[in-house]
Length: 141
Image (cartoon, rainbow, N blue to C red; front, top):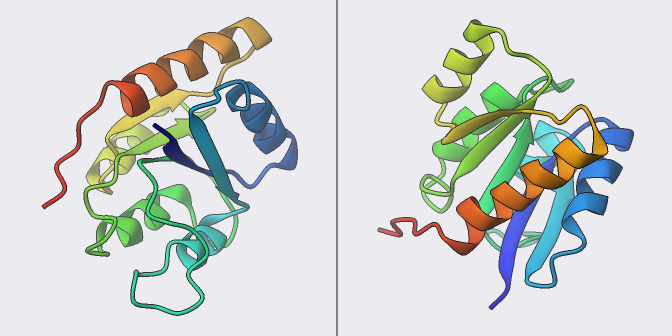
């Protein structure tokens, strides 16, 4: 079984590190977007022509992005019928309680600090794949 993971990250270095850590999982199909607007364009409703990706099993999203923040993007993702139940896990360098609260109020299912070392990154992405993809059951209706 293949699991679909959608990564929304504006920093090219952070995106490359995330993709490198996730590429070791043969059962995980990874798609990405460079910011909130790009993510929304790629997550167009199923009836829209030009839709670029299938609805993912999980969305990993940066909180602080230009043009459209991760918080606002999460709100807009939640407003779409086809993605309103898709788990959203926010990844951030911020541990500000206001950012955390805003993420959950916007519809995030999880809020995780970005790893500060390679070994922390391996552990974090192992746990994300294990919990959010392989062992998580999400309501579909």
